[in-house]
Image 1 (cartoon, rainbow, N blue to C red):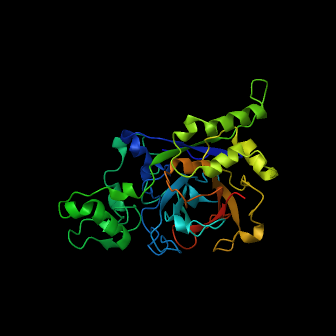
Image 2: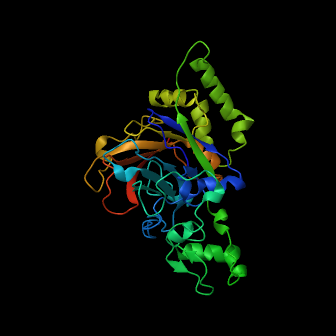
Image 3: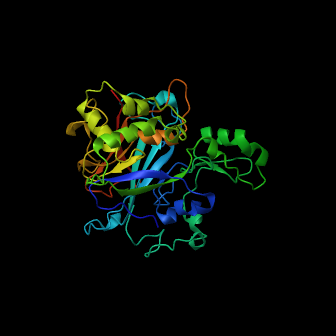
Length: 356
């Protein structure tokens, strides 16, 4: 079972590639934190329907970006949050990516008590053979392409399901046309989805002593990292903002300087988790005030929970010569009461900040 995020002031997350033989670790029953591929749903029923999963701009279905497992095990008053995960979805249409606006993102919170109809009371054994062989039969029907709730089915073979006509056409074009009726499902989500990887977290350490590197040494190391082959070895999208972050010589923004200084300790971090804390903003522009963070549908205020760092863009392979999906940081705010009102997958709020 994936470890829960510790109760440290800030935990930082990293992308960890995983071998095909270890993909079982990203199964729902292991409560993973993960990037890309199909979502590992927590509640296997009452998944978000197509209208919630479509982009408000282009109407295309959004695809899974990442999820983190973040239970509130130590909160005796929130017994229904023993299992708790947050999911982010994104529209991959680059024209829907707008400066300092986030309509092309969706965030959902899902939580379950320890006793529930999907998972055992005790943690699962960490072996692939221990997975419940009937696990998938407990789940809502899923789209063959993206893994989201499917309300449509191939009318010819009636063996494959889809969330939308868009994904049905995509699957038909890239494989199902030749395999329809052969009981041989294709795996064409790979042409649309992000590469799957595990997200691992650890407490942020900023301690300094005689053996620690100086801030200047860390900044130099960070800037060299951004210019190095190591950095470019996994940069496949538009990394102009990352280079700007590392190499700006005329920067006078104190917020930006603090961002660089803090990130220099761990240049490859892609996520920062600090429930009830504060985001690490990339610049002084477009920082929300309290009135710009909408309250939850239950009436409770939302609080900051985690942010997605710009370094994640390096792993997403968003190759575009001109327009590209981009961000400075994505800050996620969730219900401070972790309410159970409304949908099982409760919509939460994401604030997108770009570079000045």
